[in-house]
Image 1 (cartoon, rainbow, N blue to C red):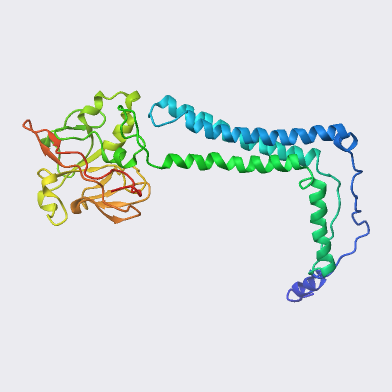
Image 2: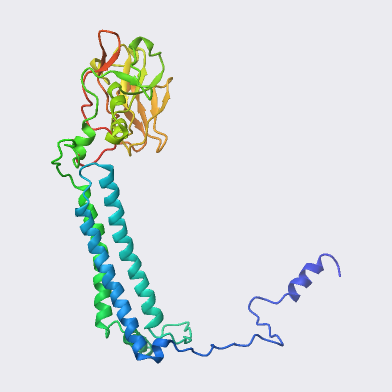
Length: 359
């Protein structure tokens, strides 16, 4: 046989995919193992206990869901106290978790101990069944409902419906925390009001700009051209961590940059908010609040590393790329009698991500 004829001969000898190859010892159908009755199948008392267990678990789930709602009100977080927040999260989480856990355990016990567990084989039909066959399918569902006891066992059905409905209530209740609400605590007057919380920071007239994290005040003469300095309010060093140090720092953090005065055109910048080419902008991205800490001194662009929003410092920190919706808020600055950089006021708009209550 020539080399040219050999591949053709092999192709002819290979059986096609449409042929059935008969073998001498085909695999035998092992059939189904003999059915083993459960204790609930043999003992009516065991069946009654299983039914009671299932609906009791459903009602325990109902109680756990109601507890989660009650915990939301019993352990409010409006005080801003860390212990209250921890208790709120703990008890609401335990309530929701236990409610879902007992629903799952009850459903598994229901299927294993109460619903019929006889094995059967259903033949597949390649085409649409006749009307009589489709009618029979409906009857199968009807029989399955009867065998499962969902329609007949009212205690289980009622418990399941109540538990499932109640399990949604804690989640709905938690949405209340997204709504603005006032505070009667004089130590935390803005708790619950996102506009006030993000609009008011520690910056105020005369507040010195200080290095982060040392807290040393910054002289205007020490800010080099093209530099970017991470800045915090000088008085932040007097705030204890338990009194909200991190929260206040997260809102007040600023990035300080120095450009040539002629690189700040008046049509894009408020020149009375800068000093000799030195500008200060919030370090919190207006997209989702990531730290904007990458500065390209040749282009004067600030980059947020999270989602690549870019801001042009020479044009009032306007957005030139990315998903951020508005420019970075600018901190008005000047110098005091000793040459130290100070704030002229707080930010005039809320810092951080844009949100629907933002004015």
